[in-house]
Length: 385
Image 1 (cartoon, rainbow, N blue to C red):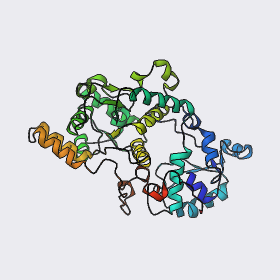
Image 2: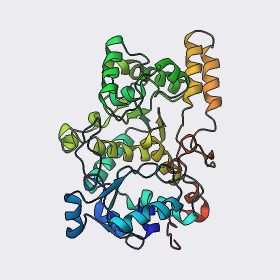
Image 3: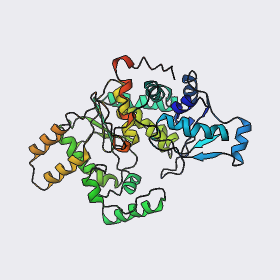
Image 4: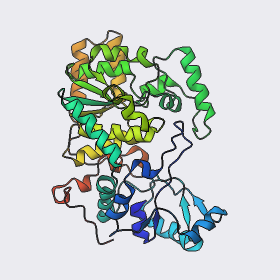
């Protein structure tokens, strides 16, 4: 949105965050990000205001605002040809969906570089979140290397995806009821087994334990769980905890008083996990959601820090073969390692799939235009738009 506002030469208002999701998080943008730094660091590129000027604010309050979702994966020309005339006509346009609204590829280099500048420089968490993140990292470092496991096995993820591997019948019913309760989750009838075989399910904690062992992850390493509450609790975490006894979370590293301010503010909790994820020796996401993708790209930007990108479709097939006795442990482990040798966050080109942007590599997971030597972290000036 910053890049689009800059390209259209229009004023951007600090975004309002969705408060209707499963988490019901009341956090505002300024509760998560340093809003003054955001505005000041981009002042040479785009005018950003914390709120609308009074005259325009009154128009919005009486319903005189044009609201619309931009078309996903659009070229910058779409905004010039379709959105700018609407802004000129209505003075204020609310873009009510802003994720994946700009194409990954085929955009001018200066646009791609500005996207990086916003993501890696202008967006900085509040000092309270940053300081607590540093404290967590310091506590972890005192006890040696640590891996961050982004274990997407929370109730909302399972209900949304329809993935119920390892759940009992009561849990399957509960997840199904939740999926039907949220009208904006379009897919209702889901075959969990087929979805899992196609690689569209997050790995279960039990599957994750097997994969970590197969990857020869040392069980003396600390494993920091970056996630909300794991569905099924200790029962589902038992296998992973037995294989890796040094499992930790922010809740076990910090005092309740340290996290009191963040309770019921899942976005701020996620921001804390994001900071720890950036600093980890290895980052392993079990599902490729937005946070996992952005952490992956940020770690590339910080010097291609190791991120193991799990090929779930292949892994669940290997797991099933191992569990059925078709593969020995050594065959299983060799296959897992061999298939992930080139999936550790190394320099690579983004996969481009014309006319199928949802299936290609996400820009923020691999912002290669900003990773070349001539576009180092010290060279995020844009200009020329």
